[in-house]
Image 1 (spheres, protein in one colour):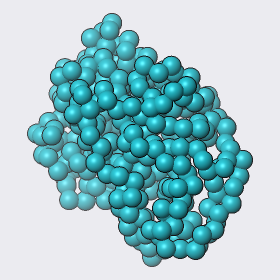
Image 2 (cartoon, rainbow, N blue to C red):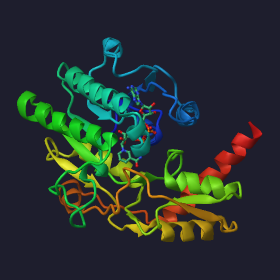
Image 3 (tube, rainbow, N blue to C red):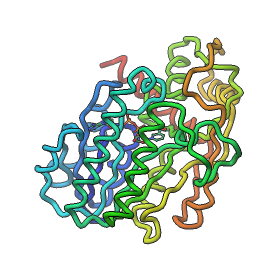
Image 4 (cartoon, rainbow, N blue to C red):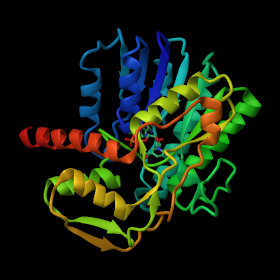
Amino acid sequence: MIENKVVLITGAAGFIGSHLTEELLKHDNYLILIDNFNEYYEGKDYNIREITKNYQENKNFKLFKEDLTNKTVFKKINHSLDYIFHLAAQAGVRYSIAHATEITHNNIESTLNIFEFALNTNVEKIIYASSSSVYGNPIYTPVDENHPKNPISPYAISKYCGEIYADYYYREKGLPITSLRFYTVYGPRGRPDMAIRKFFNAMFKNEAITIYGDGTQLRDFTYISDIINGLILAAESKRSSGEVFNLGCSNPISINDLVEKMYAISKTPKKFTHAEKQEGDVNITHSDILKAKKILGYFPKVNIDEGLKYQWEWQRKYLQFLKKA
Ligand SMILES: NC(=O)c1ccc[n+]([C@@H]2O[C@H](COP(=O)([O-])OP(=O)(O)OC[C@H]3O[C@@H](n4cnc5c(N)ncnc54)[C@H](O)[C@@H]3O)[C@@H](O)[C@H]2O)c1
């Protein structure tokens, strides 16, 4: 566990960043949080309020509402850093197809700025958040880290490009960077553009859910606490610099089975329609996590049935809070 350290987290107001922030605040770390609070979805102010309410700004953390494509924020950081977690990115495969230039500029430039900034620090480890989307449609499963990279969206290309830069800064500049390829992450505060959050929302409102394609596509859903654990293990590992790891659950299920499980939990009447398969969607994601198990000691603990229950409990409360607000 990371304790009594100074840690920079980018994308801290987002889904994964807010969970990492919450976890590291519990262990007496001083956190420097950066997020531009972009308007891709609502709820980031809520995320930050929820996780920092029992802590003091300047004593436990410092929040910068700044854009990483602009280097001015780095001039304001005068702490000596132990770890950097670079989670900020414009996410969303479908959004990226409609906004290719924006996503390319945002994701690649902010990543380069972080790596350049890190050159002037003595940081112990930099973690770069990559994505299983770099593989595209797998040619074999489960997919290990050596599988060919065939990204099929500008988002996936931007994530892969960040990995190539991570490798360059590791080999040529000696930066201790590790890239982690996350597989469809879900859980409380999950992104509103992702299937599980969208489906539970519709169930709560008694509306029909839309399944893209025939629903037989398989997804390796990974619960947020397992991802947070993987992030921390990778940061602490002495053997992770210059390496890439899959962080998944390695137990994919079809969207049709997922929906069945979700209705069983929400106990709401089944209402769904099918729409055409979306551009950029892959047919299957299935991680081989042997490398992360062996080198990092990463063993995912939360299965999909438990994880869905936790997300539903949180989401019901959140939707009731929104109704009252
Ligand atoms: N959620 C998943 O299933 C998943 C899967 C694979 C990879 N990832 C990666 O994990 C990371 C976190 O994903 P998430 O689901 O929490 O997304 P998110 O959108 O909830 O969080 C990303 C945060 O980054 C911030 N941000 C974006 N561009 C920025 C910039 N230029 N400057 C400052 N802040 C900026 C956004 O405001 C947002 O709060 C991303 O890098 C994403 O690509 C996520």
